[in-house]
Length: 607
View: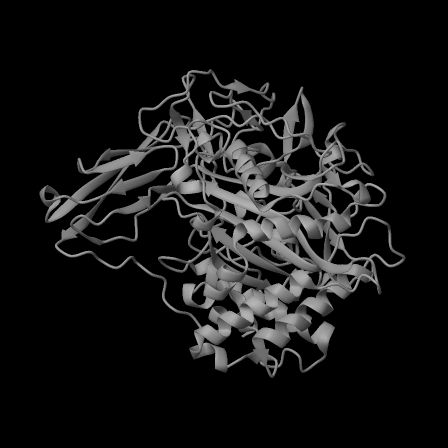
């Protein structure tokens, strides 16, 4: 499931953190940048990645100057390996699985499959094994993974076996959960999503989303947009941005190495998750699409009934309150009954699917701009996530060095510099909490930029650019020419000092008050490798400043392994997070729609 990040399955493991704390930019050995000018910073050229074992890029990677720092990371966590869900496979049946490894210390980690049958192939960049068992593989195939951490002088071996039988076996599947999850919080059944896939294919949503985004552009610039962004061009721009993040020409439609079979046709993308986020300060619909390629590649759209309008409003909370009342009303109308689950939709998947599509259509088509200029369906942006090399470090010849392949970026359809049209481009990753303070009315905790980034305090010169003053967030600290700039991609191996020092110096990563913030106050990558659960609902200090400060950090929980959509199983954190969404959703329904609006919902974490 896409937990927040946006997001979408987020985290990547790992580059030499003393060599590079911030940004890695690899030289291109594919086609040059399209050069499309946009008012937002223009994306970097789209360099290639290794798509097959043994392939290499002749260009030498170009890197930013290393940041001088005395920061060191204590070796407090052991590396964790996650064996594949496949336990049995049939002859001639093609499967793929990842060799996922996580170290919470963000150490440089190299993963190699040092034993596998001849009928299998390992791609080190995506950390994926592709296998079609042969007769010679019976009765079972043995695999061995070797994990090395040169900075620690550690080597670990993990072995597992998969049985080979005569007939093809069903893919491992996540167990069905409660109706509140399956019909409201995280709809992922393909039968339930069938109608939405027909009505809103990814290229149509990209095209329509760009149209809704125009309202964020003030006049007279908006009226100068003469050429609408087509569905095909919008789709190609999305792939270009993804290719830049992952340094992978297989994603780039301009490159001779473009994998047209996997990514050329937008019809190959399918909606895999429909997620009304009824728990956020700004409620919204999140819909997640997945490419049909063998490697996981996701696009998560964030949709609201209110535009982020440019002119300042007399009341800062006016848009937010309107957004929540309208969106929660739409959710109640289309998906709920008597303040809870609609029992008719529990068994009737087709009817439920039509209701899902109707909700999404009503949201996108919503237009009450005659009343208020910001009352209109709006694509706030796309969170992109994939295991295509984004978190991988390379050797000088471009071959794989270390990492887990996962990478995140965000895209928005900004106006091009000539003012004639729009273009989807990579934008700065939204900021995250580095400190907190009571709200002005003392009713809750709100984000605050930590001293290092806070222009109102004794900050480090240059780092204040990362502080989003109106929200109290701090963006990821990329470096350019020795100065901080807002980072446009995230991975486990990036921003190590920020994540393990600057970001947590005032409040620990597992501080329960972070759960009130955007993406629960942690970065995309941190969100998807977290080893702690939600805050203690029995300690009021986690949400109420009048109760002091929390007595303890969030409880320990098994590590979350990059889960975007629960295909093969549910992580403990995913289920706990969904309980948190129901708790928060109940409160917000009652706040914005009346005391009976959420009467059918509960708060499992408060029990």
